[in-house]
Image (cartoon, rainbow, N blue to C red):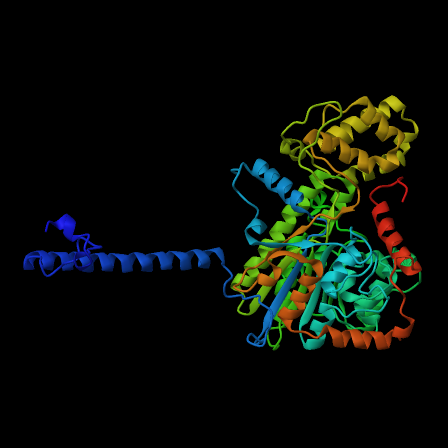
Length: 578
């Protein structure tokens, strides 16, 4: 029987021609056995190398693997000390990141694949609607984070039935954590207010300020405050804007034990957070801290978001060193939203870059911290309906946009509009002809601030004839040159990104989740009881559930809340009807 015929028979079946058989000579069987052992060893070696490569890839993709940000479960209870950093990029949608990424690549001469620091920490996306609208405002958005519940536009940590809801910050303070708020807008603005106060509408800034320093039903819940908004802490007689004659700064320092820093000099004395006595109230501007585009030239007057972030983190870490619990810190890139309302792309890219630096600073803090910690970052909504391309009327679309136009800008539209108003109030303006005024605007503001040397007569006439709306005209001039488009001066319903510091169990924030899921995650991570805080608040506010207001959108308070949200936007779009 020949070998080919033998291979077809059951008794002679031979799957592997190299496998030794009794019919092979001894030398052949030895060599064949040795070869087979070598193949087995090579296979095992390849398997081990593959496993090692997979483990290494997972390890390197998660540089913060030692900071597991999974929430507590029966099998994973909260043990030991932990810190939680929550960052809000107010008004930043995905297009803001695309625009900023390309802009930074342009001004720094980076390759097209050079990403922002935050890009590497993308975890999921969030849906943003409020309880009464598909398009949220910052108050309802922040209430979703602070209370993990939906509410109406304009609501500051109160629910649609107008009952107060306990916040993550208040519950953390009660559980023994230190707490802090860092923003670049008024500290009484919607986002920080939702973590530290409870009012029916965001317009009640005087009351928000009072609750933030400890004059509310829970007493003091915040240990560190950095931001702007000094005006709502002072009466008009002392340069403030309160409707009453209360001096909350004096009240805070004399009666409630706060330390106070009111300028850059006092901020610098904190020595990067090494020399901070809590509680600390730092109010570094009457209203908002200037846009980063402008602040860069006033760095001796105002601290940046990234500086305040580093100072706050170090101060809270040092103060909690001997505590069993760590800290909770909310950081907001507040003015990304304002740039979106104005439709100013140049102001926005600098705001996003500064937010990215702050995110990096927080991430690096966690890397070197001896305590467990987590960083979660997201936006409350998108603002402006930003698009990184436009189609000019009567023209075919151009598949491009131009970062060079933004790189030429040296001042924000807000600053340029302020300069125009100051000029109109000057003696020089009183004797200036229309021709000379137009020439001054073109040379000093349009070319001097925007770097635009081809302003049209229509654009210049708009600035001369309607100076009150010049903030939007300046923004439109630069947006057109950069081929940046906007669909609104308000908010949109687009989903926003979620970023985390990593960890093996971040599935709760993966995929597309509700903004309330972000709030729930914060509570789970710190293992705090928000419900108990809510019960105490309801007792303190004497809330009667039998008198709860029905939430059908017709209720007067909800209408006022919506109006308050619109009034806040009116600041950036003067002259438009609401």
